[in-house]
Length: 319
Image (cartoon, rainbow, N blue to C red; front, side, top):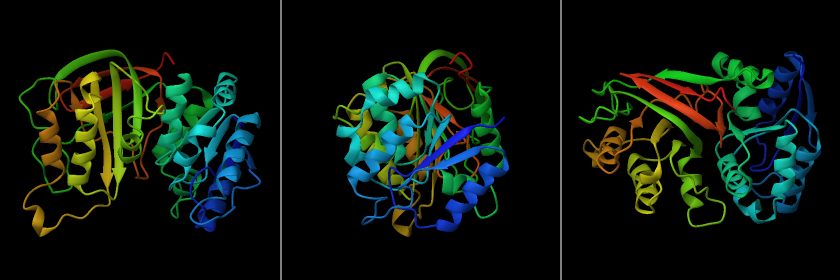
């Protein structure tokens, strides 16, 4: 099914031009019409053009009439633009069927859109890191993206990590509470929201932080040591955010390095600590984050969550 995909750069400058080109060619090979924004390859300091340039790109994307507005890459930059984004324009484009898709820094945009309008955006790939991957796009990611284009995406399932860690890289939730890893439960109609933990925590206390109660919060991050992850979670905890949620989904936390100083403190330690602070279910290994194999998630949509042992099902078919 041919779709119109608009590529724009609201965050960091595109440094990997080869990945950018590979991504466009891949989308075209799938039969889609790819329109590239006039400033997609602009560069100013670390950004894809100055603030005015990137802001204009967002609004051109909203006006393009495309089926999907796909960011070229993440990085940093959207936070600077939040006060000047025309949110009614974004919401109107979404009402007409446009899907805004992105990752990482895109969490700032998604959170602000949700806080200001309640509209649904999609956590998924960026052009370069997703479709422009050196070895080609991940099959699962591409299938999920195709489901989005066809309007067939209804949910995702995955298996949590074992309760006993097999390596320092594994993240587990060890708790006698039956609602945690290894338990069985069902949660209905929670607002699915979240994204990059660092970006989300940076918005706390601003008008761009969604005030979601009874939600299903998903989190991921990259190149953050477990103690930094715990510190960010503590910020959300002490602000009362985590205790207002129906469930917390922990995605992929990657590209960090433990040291001898840690002496056994690792991601599992962070999750165990968190499980002692909140009463809601904490589920691990959500296939989303700065990894090739990731699903697409509708930020702001109502979703149902069920778990049976290590097996988890997240459904938003009623979006």
